[in-house]
Length: 301
View 1: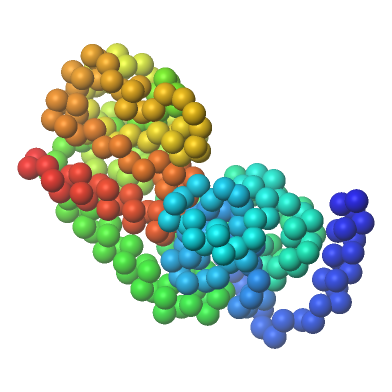
View 2: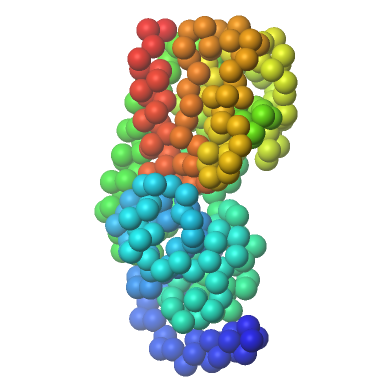
């Protein structure tokens, strides 16, 4: 069924008129030539959806769920075309988008969805997340004729970063901690969440942490031993809507209570979905920065 469907779609694609203008877009897989100003767009990456929404680009197809409450209105006005991991190929076939955007968790679907429509992989990953986020903003601006909006969005992001830098300056070191049910792991400057150190200048409470995708598993004794002044907490279960022990319950124990972070009221529970699901999205990054500005700004240091 899917073979016949894709064959039919290929014929439709060949029969479609050539777009008036093509341009080269920098993607996670290198420069790709696509038609400018695509009108019907399907997106399978929440960071991309977040940034496109911030730029005012309408999106016709989105995954279900979109995880971020800030994107719920966008999702309500769009058609569900699968999940972050599994596109609904039949829905895409009917939609016949001008462009499909994948990234991160959906990046492996680049080949299959390319059989239906032009597709690009806009994955953002690694410790240079802010740099990639700015590059994606510029690329979307050029692709959708939103150059001015892209410049303004980048300026807003840069201003928010500067504000966060001022807020954390001189307030001590921090440790990024992810809870997953009752388990905990920590992340350093070279990790997927490392931009919280590098971009805003927050000193690391612990040097040399593994930069593995799932972080460095640690014990509560580890936290007590290293005694972080700030804990930036990401609740994976909350990010994906899973049932199970919440981060606040996981960290409610005597060893954590002994840390400076706990004694000084400096455990910051960051909204998890923007960081864990939409990492690199412009709106998601600024939301996280707002939380950091509020937490550190309220501290006398």
